[in-house]
Length: 156
Image (cartoon, rainbow, N blue to C red; front, side, top):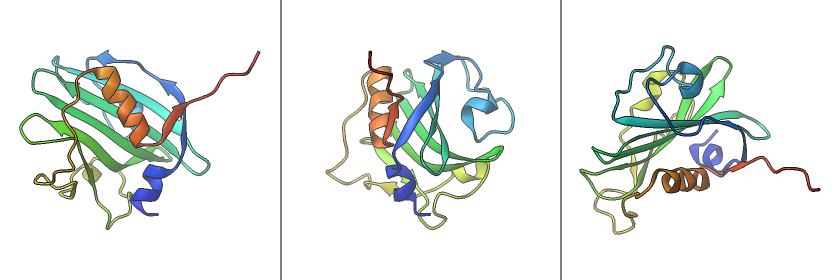
C-alpha cells in the first residue's frame, strides 16, 4: 500500500483523549511497546480512528517552549503499529512539513518506523506553511491533513 493512499484514506474517529500531560501510554501511541516518558513540558493527544480497511491512531505531541509540534499517523496491525507519516513543525527550521518513507509504503512495525529522512516540502521550498499558533488549531489541521473526522451523530 502506498503512503499517499493510507494518508488519503477517509477515517472516522471513534475515541479522542483530549489534550493530556504526563507519560504517553502504549495504547495511545500505537507504536511504543512500553509507556513513553515525554517530560513535563510536553502535551499530547491521541485519537483512534477506522476506515473501510484499517484502524489508525493519530498521536500529537507538542512542546510549546521548544516550538516543537508533531502529529503522527500510525496504522494499527494487530497489537503493533506502523508509522505512516509525520506531520510536523520545528521552530529551528522553516514551515510545517511531512516526513514519510515512500519506499516501505507505510508498513514497518514498531518504533524503528519513526526514523525517515524524506521531507515534503524541502526546507528551501517556498511552499512551506507558517508556524502553528494554538493546540486545537494544530489538531484540526492534522485531522484535515490525515482525512479524519469525528463520527456523525443521529439526526433528531
